[in-house]
Length: 275
Image (cartoon, rainbow, N blue to C red; front, side, top):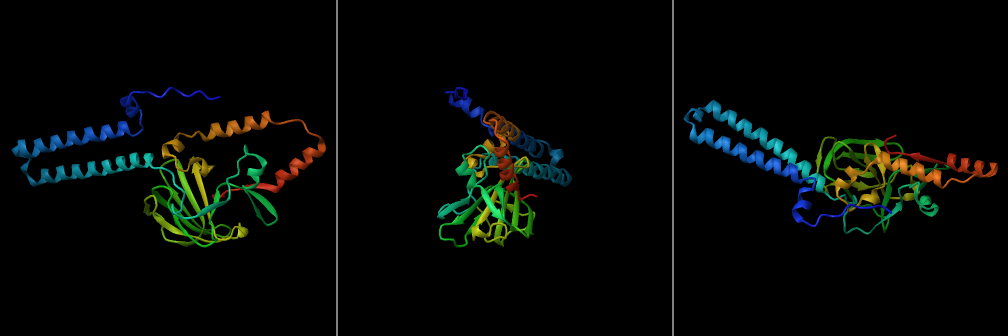
């Protein structure tokens, strides 16, 4: 059983421990200092009344405003809650799950996609409307569109960056409404669900992937969680835990069982949207 640190009862201690607290304090103090300097130089010092100095001060203010906006945007993004890339009122169902090596066999089967007589392990989730109709696809998080492409197997694909370590991928899109380089807010419409060659049996659907440090993670594990939780998630440690679990549950098998397991392994291949 995991042991959790005792949660501080003092509300000030809990506030100070928030990831956004120190950046917010820094930004506030910097703004007050700059305001005081500008006030003194423009009001209390006649020498600062020249147009050149006024222009320089205005430039300083513009630079500070830009830095402030970037800091504020970073803090806000850390507090965003990861949402499903669909309208909250939509009656949706996840038709293909993320393939989890630690899940029960029945759950793992829900994370397999049959293509060209071979099973592939899903590195994301497939979402469909309960009626099978097309639906709007929206940004799961705020960020910047880094790539828009047409893939021969996955259909139209949009990739959005959410900082240095987090990326979201939207595939099997019918219509694409964004361009590379566009700034996107959470909930903005980026396209519509469509069909693709890789998962024809899935019909009209969206294939959605969530990546941390270039590694696919289970989106369902982080939906309705703050971005900070995903940022703190240790991908390498999770991989190590998975390897240890496999070693602990491994039991000697006969040659026939080994051959059968090897056949299953050959029939199941991981297929990532980034390959």
